Image (cartoon, rainbow, N blue to C red; front, side, top):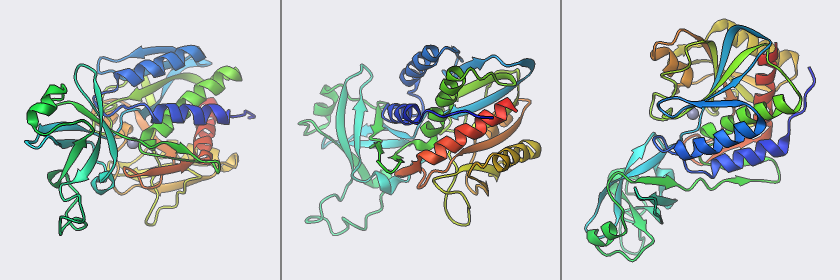
Amino acid sequence: MEFSINKEYVLNTAKELLEFNSPSGFCFKIMDMIEDKVKNIGYKFERTNKGCGVITIDGRSDEKVIGLSAHVDTLGAMVRSITSKGTLKFTLIGGPIVPTLDSEYCTIRTRDGREYTGTFLSESAAVHVYEDATSKKRDPENMEIRIDEVVKNKDDVKNLGISVGDFIFIDPKTTITESGFVKSRFIDDKGSVACLLSLLELFKRESIVPSYKTKIFISTYEEVGHGSSYIPSDITEMIAVDMGCIGLDLECTEYDVSICAKDSGGPYDYNMVTDLVNLSEDNNISYAIDIYPRYGSDVGAALRGGNNIRGALIGPGVHASHGMERTHYNALENTIKLLCLYLTK
Ligand SMILES: [Zn+2]
């Protein structure tokens, strides 16, 4: 099957998604943006009670419904308390590598929509003052957020409208290089959301109709464990499209689509994995089969939520996950190709 992927669309969409703040629990705004994009391409978009997006693509047959999922929520933080000296203590949303947050810029959003910038820092931030400036453990207990406003005490901060429970967005620092690398926080899993939107763009542009009715599920709350706990009940098989792991004895690189055979939740559906491997082999798609030692996916959440599905997991290889991540355009392209082939087989 011949089809051509629109590289510019893929990378522009990835950049737009990556730069839009959406930690778990604060995804309704990015979902509006995705809804606009999907409707502009020309597909139907609905929302679940929890705020996940469901995009329906009519297929040649209604015999079964195939689901694809990717999560648009990211890691982040929330104001835990305001200190007497006018800094913020924070609680984490999801599991970032906390030492990578040291000196990271952020934005604090008040409940009434005001935004202030700030910086994550160690409580022993100055090397000229603190003996433990380099050695103090980087964890939320020993870190704080310095707000870029003239605040000298707790009341000054409260007067800005900042309060416990306000979201803190970590600066994604999205950069796309001439050499084709996408480096940013939260490529997990916005790289995959960009792949799914690019798949829609491809289907529409080339008038490709999938073999079966297909529902694309854009999940939220994945980073906190219950992204796809509910999915439309007519889905019988689902591919979670989520970042591929890189490191240790794993084979995946930043150029491959990763096919996961087993993660922390156990093996994926044997026949689906086999189909994905065979399609990659037959079509010269650069892929790797891997075991993810410390990983759970939307398929796992859907199964634990009681959904009657079989599931697989694929996605672009992402280096340094939950830290300063990076992937390459080739990994995104290989992921889109494999999804297109799977849906039209
Ligand atoms: Zn993920």
